[in-house]
Length: 329
Image (cartoon, rainbow, N blue to C red; front, side, top):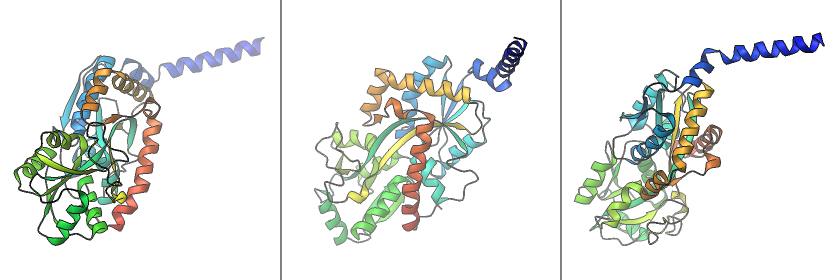
């Protein structure tokens, strides 16, 4: 009997000690002040729009405002670097994407590890890219575009969001696959790139479908294909790259949420629950759908799912980047 009582007392004392550990106490109280969400790209881009949609829903669950801070530069690396250096207390988060948490790791010598120096919170949304061109470009489909580019080597131009960004990577792959040659013009964000293709200053763009679609629907630019595995529900007349004869260009752009490495598990759990609650709200899902994106299903919204998804993307795309000899500047 005394042994059982002694064992019970030991367990009770251990539980009490665990409950008052500083990390656990902070997690129980979290959050007590506003949270900063770093978006490592300019306002108005796809990552920014998704971040703002989800942040509003998270605010309702957490009871604190989430302040968006756009920190653009270095293909998203400037904002990612700031997030890595932030205190791991749950009050600084980053809404990143393929660029920041896959591509940059193969393009640059970084002072951090894109996989291991962040604490995953949740996958958010996913969407294909879209190949678009100025409205008066004399080609009606992707095969016609290839023929026109071959007939005009080095004369056309494609806007990108910097070396190693998805538009640049897909542009390089497009050249390698089709044997075409054209110039790359870097932009700091999607809005100015779209303005220039609409104005005829550049010929081509490969941008996230959500950003390109409104301009396609308004007949300001012409669309050739989407890089997803299926057609967009909001634009069923635009073929996929596979249907157009170029399956190697299949690519899905995605957005996810991380905290700095070392953020307490209890805080991560609260953030993850807030994300799931936000993505379950009809208003948030509707807004994401209007952007031409899909929210990840509930069973893929766990920190573990994000880590495995990111790891698989690294294993898929790093060899492609290195084989294409794409290097960050």
